[in-house]
Length: 147
Picture: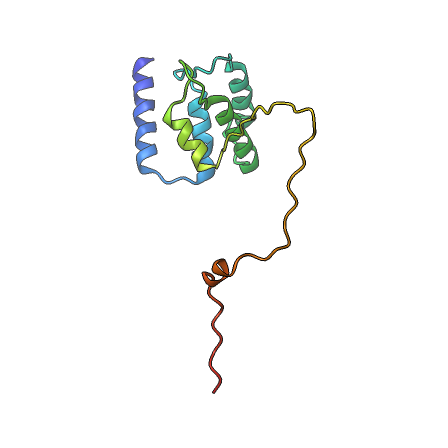
């Protein structure tokens, strides 16, 4: 059994480095890899059942699906389960930071504002034009000279 496993592993590694395949297959294989038995994902939650459900969805019928929408949704769901910027043993470290930067994941921080006894209304905008010095810094569009 070990010899067969070695042969299959070598064949898979060779095919991954030499064969061409489309992005749909690549995304699907990344999903499969994250669900592999030799991969542990430390998230603080036990997500193994969620990962197995994703695996079953993309391998229904005994083959990796070629449904790009299903793979895309599954990839997003799995990445959301895996990436963590929380400190501690379940942190994804820089990988999560780079991933967040790649998709413009900007955190929103709620700020605490003390309650006041009177409501604060915003200052009304003035209809006074800006000073001439500010206007002189803006160049007027060039018009062609008359012939």
